[in-house]
Image 1 (cartoon, rainbow, N blue to C red):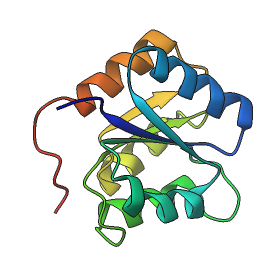
Image 2 (cartoon, rainbow, N blue to C red):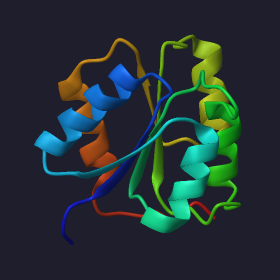
Image 3 (tube, one colour):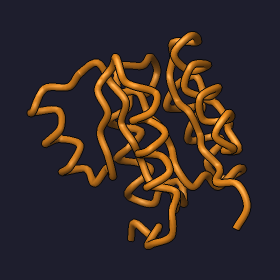
Image 4 (cartoon, one colour):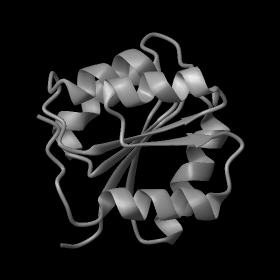
Length: 129
């Protein structure tokens, strides 16, 4: 199958690079986006297997972006992992209602991030329809 493609979406450059470097060291092909609009622009071009998505971003936040990704508006077949400082139970329920595949609270353990991305990128249904 080759390397799984991951699109890392976060408006904070330091966090975006931290996630990207950790995933690259594990052999993932990593692309980055600075916000939700950038993410939606790139999804059709790179066809990611997994999208790590921050919630609090300018222009288009993670909630709207995840909804658009999972409703098929962007033709996304990848899995969505929300990575956010907003880790309240209500946020997790909202993510589940949208249909995100996993939720990781900031600050996060890079080992846990890698385990979740590996699981999401592994074999199995990637169709959200």
